[in-house]
Image 1: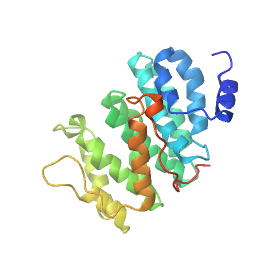
Image 2: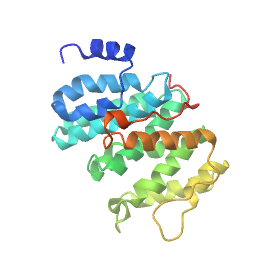
Image 3: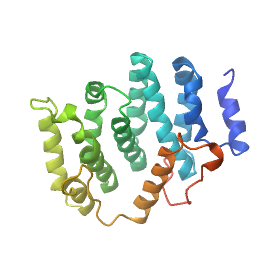
Image 4: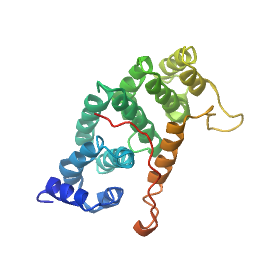
Length: 236
């Protein structure tokens, strides 16, 4: 990778399928992934094409997983701090919403130890429960109820984070906006998934996009089909 950004720009002009970036992570060392693919992933997070942005969030998660799988915890922590600055503290709400989604994906993929997640990412995620934008609070509620609070690490008696998680969910249940209330309150009886009431067209489009991205690693390139274009906002 002598000049990865130049290659990235050339590939973009030629219509490169960016989900393939997820597949090539395994071909490079964690140093190369951190030094080069990390920059590409963060650049793609602000792409004007919605499909590319959602794939880039998945790519961010895969990069973090690579760091921890290789024992490069210091590089992983550096990347986490960069994500917090770039997304959690983003002045535009779509950046903060992306941070909530990335956190949920990190937990669901088990790409880092949960004690490390709790120490380095959970405080920033919980801070977004007070975000002034309801769309951000909705994804925080989803992340907490669907993923974080389903992990045994956070459900163990005496967990240092259990009280704070429950307090945050209770606050979201009292949210004056209907969507954060619904996503933090309701669960399907007898199963571990939660009931989403009346999803908006944008939410449904995002769900299909994420399912498409999640299958990218399992499907040959010629069988991968791009989702329909939707109205996912550009980041910044």
